[in-house]
Length: 296
Image 1 (cartoon, helix red, strand yellow):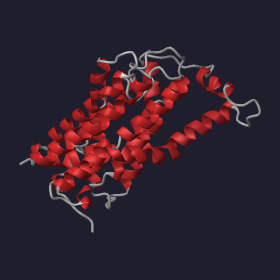
Image 2: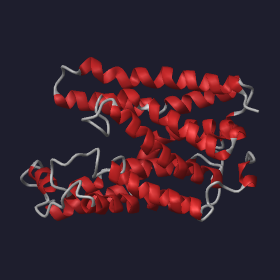
Image 3: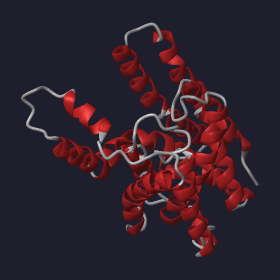
Image 4: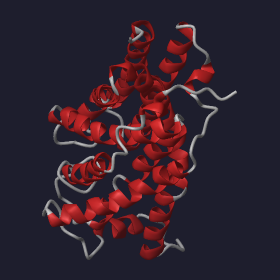
């Protein structure tokens, strides 16, 4: 039996907090490009904490404890390796699929990398090779941890609160419903060009496909650890590496079709991994894993 009160509080607060923040950049559309980028980055980063704040309030308002969100729990350690390393591998695979499906071409001239190098000060000690190594190294190491600070805002809400509250419906229904809501939550950002800049309306539904595929993987991590830290780390890794293949593709390709994990090429790679989870019976997760456990 689903308790509707905390769910209602959570959903209303999540959208009331996040959507106005997603819309803030519209007030600066006539500003210079640098200002627009700064405002968008800050507003969108703050919006990511809408679900987390809503989860905390909904838990407290429904008589629960902050500990119910399991921030004090880590769970099985091997799933942190999955969370950290899986998405860099899938991002690389996305680059290959993009080229294989002819949605993009390998850029032997490394145009984007050389343009970035040209923008550096003339006395910079970085070479194009070092610049690439630094970008890739950060994406695989520091960036997922930094991004996790903001990703936790989402994961505390979507996986830490919403998913467990929906589990009485059945695991698959809980995963799909929570992932679909997560996708539509991005609507104001998508309409402003996030992920699918040429498809402000269709991009909303494309985002839902992406979040459903990601939602299965993030839920698998959460249900095996009963901790929001694993999906938060995975979410941080996705944000760090999702666009890496773009550095190695000739500019001008359709980014909705290839080049990023959010593109159709990325869907193919994510769907293959999700299919592997299903065929190996890793999803749905064993029933006893679904019982709540609070660590003192």
